[in-house]
Image (cartoon, rainbow, N blue to C red; front, side, top):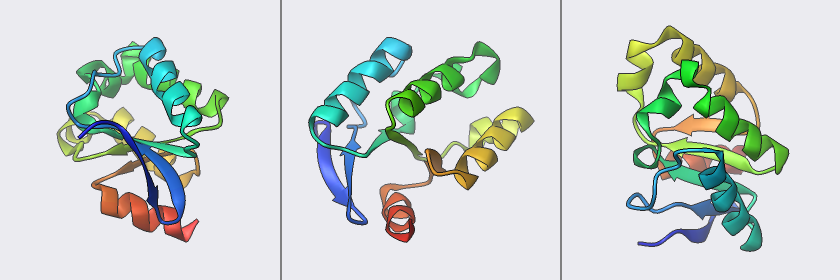
Amino acid sequence: MPDALQHLGGIPVFVCAADGAPLRDERAAIDVIGNASYQGAAWVAVPVGRLTDDFFRLRTRLAGDIVQKFVNYRMGLAVVGDISAHTDASTALRDFVRESNRGTQTWFVPDTEALRTRLAQD
């Protein structure tokens, strides 16, 4: 299934396909943001498999750089999937995820249905 615009909880979400190119850097994030914006999305849902291990190692700053691009372009970012192996290995990442999920810009959710529920509540 290719990347596609879907309406989840009444919100237009650009849902990235699990088998697409990884978001390895800020440039890849900007490309996704551009595609999502062109299609009228307010959020982008990125499967965990589209993120490299460097995203989950906060010392690389990749997560911060990518999240900042989404903030700059006023596009919500939802990381969709199980990241427990990463959060179990890193207190800093666990804290980052917890703080992100308290906000309104970047969320880490277990699946698309959880994202749909969360969007419907906001």
